[in-house]
Structure formats: structure tokens, C-alpha cells
Length: 401
Ligand SMILES: *Cc1c(COP(=O)(O)O)cnc(C)c1O
Image (cartoon, rainbow, N blue to C red; front, side, top):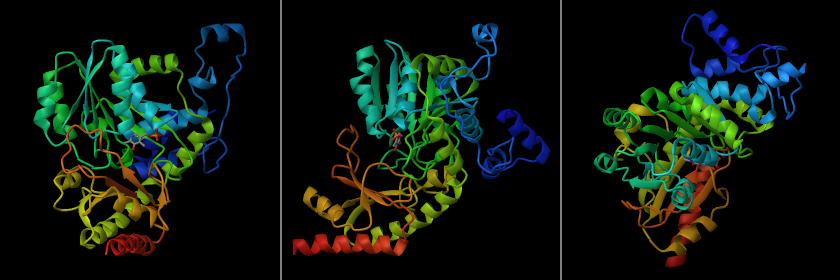
């Protein structure tokens, strides 16, 4: 069987130029041996050895299901290619990708710094589980780089960034933060949750981040049918993560990996469509008269707009807002009045979703002392979606008068 990395390198050499990621994905991640457009699915736990010495040496490419299959390996090669990383480990969820990173890097008496507007389940993991292992975690204000600088300690081992942040989408200057941290400490590892952008849009490792994490559940999968995550690392951390992966036993099923591999090829196109729809929803929300604040870095007056333009240029399909009313009843009425949007967690798929985002856990509230509504704009007709919002807003306002 042909090796995927050799195949990838052969195509790179034969085309004599730097192919764009979208081309490489389509050109390289097919069935190398038989010519099918999609890659093959190999499921399995047991892999047979030809004799006992091969079994004892244990140095075959494939030795057991949890150590990788040709299919999980294909996904790891694809994500590493996109992230420009040395290694990628796939995990059973995006959350597991985050928690595995913390467990791999930290030991008792270490200190970690995490952005305050981080994905909340990770914050709960820090508070409920890491404290048991005597790891201390501080949360820094995403709007204040100085705050991060003052919280840095000599025993700070991990800095975890997320950008744009969850629900309110604050953008961090990743390049400048990494440069600063590397000047201050050579033992501090920087990880980043890159789920908002996916590695098609932003490549944290090229900006100085050591570990880039993606909830592949979201845009890479794009159909709300798989839960899966990835952790991509630079060369200096590959060995540590190889060992950790064996110790913790995390993996994802080959079947889920083929679904992601298939859908990865259209991520770039889908993000363009999401972006254009979000532009229209932004315009509607900001002019509707019902909304007090819209959270999206694409808005020219957003404090994040400049960095978004420099680093991203494209939005994904999520946008949040607060109502002029701060009564929770009005928020509930608005969501319950929606006929096309579904009420549900997560984002990244074709289905438009609405949810009330929980920001109570935040230490730095900013303008977020009221509930926040988060929308994922999917692929239903954009006019139908805007009408759905408009009808529900009118319904809330009529009830009041
Ligand atoms: C959803 C999400 C995750 C977790 O992904 P799951 O696969 O649902 O566990 C991690 N980070 C961010 C920013 C997310 O939005």
C-alpha cells in the first residue's frame, strides 16, 4: 500500500509550485491505490503480524486500532498539512482535544494562563479537574494584553489562547502574544483553539503557537453528524504527544475520519457562503432597531475589525447579539418564535441554529452583563432566515405593547 506522506510529497514535487491547500486536499486525499475519488475506509482493532519477532518488535506502521489505521492516519496527515504541524492526534471530541493538551503538558505545581472568554467546558475542566492535580489556572482579559503580561509567573507552563473567543469573538494578536511569551520564557508552551477559523483560514503554528487545536465537529465536518477533535503540534512536542496518545488511549473511529476527510474538501467554499450570509444578517441586525449590540469582527466599528482584516479576512457562520431589553423572558420569546432556525448547541453545519450563550462564568464582563443570543447561519435561503428573525422580533415587540 502506498504511503500517504510519500504520495503527498510526490504530488508537491511533480507540480513544481506551492499548491493552495484546497487544491492539495482534493489532489492528495483520494484512494491512492485504486483510483476512487474518496479515500478508503479501514476499520479495525486487531492487525495481524506475520510472525512472533514482528509481534515482539512492535515496529510495524500499524499495530493496533487505537494506535492508528490507514484512515485515521490519512486525516492526521491532512490536518498536519493544513496546520503546517509536525504531528496531529485525533481525539474523540473537540473538548477531549483541549483537555488532552492540558493533561499532556501540565504537572502538579505548574501554572496555566487561559483567556477568560474561552470555550466554557474547558474552563470548567480547569476549575473542577486541574485543581485536583494541584495545577493553578488564571484567566486573563482578552481585551487587555497587559493583564496577560502581569499574570505570567516563573512556573507558568501553558498559555492557552482562543481567537476569536467563544460567543463574543474577541480577537487576540496571536503573533504579538507569542513573540512576547517566547522572549520572557523558554519553557512556556502556547496552545490555541483554532475552531472558529479552521486551519484553512488561519494557521496558528506559523504565528508562533506550539499546539493548534480544532473541534473538527464544527466546520470541517459541516453536517452535525460527527464529534471529533484534533491536536496539531510542532516538532519539539511530537514525542511528548506520541507517548501521551498511547498512555491515554484516545482516538476517533475510522468511519468518522472518512466523513471529515470528505467534508474537508469543501470547507473553504462553505466558509465563503457562511461569510456572505453573515454579512447580510449583520446588516439586518444592526439596522433592525431591536438589537443593542452585535458581536462580529466583520463590523467596521468592532474593536476586533483591524486584527480580523489582518489575520482572517473571512468570517465563519456565527454571530451574536444582545437585545435592547435585558429581560430573559424577551430572549426566550424571541428564540421560541423562530420557525426556521433550530434551537440547539454547536455550530458549523448546514442547519441554522440559535442558542442562548452562557457568559456568567466570565471574570471580565465587558458589555456582556445581559444574555447573549448566538446564531449559526446555515444554508437555508438567506431571505427566509432574515424573515424568520424579523417575524420573531415583531412577535416579541407586539407582546410588549
Ligand atoms: C464546540 C467547541 C469545542 C468542542 O468541540 P466538541 O467536538 O463539541 O467537543 C471546542 N472549542 C470550541 C471553541 C468550540 O466551539
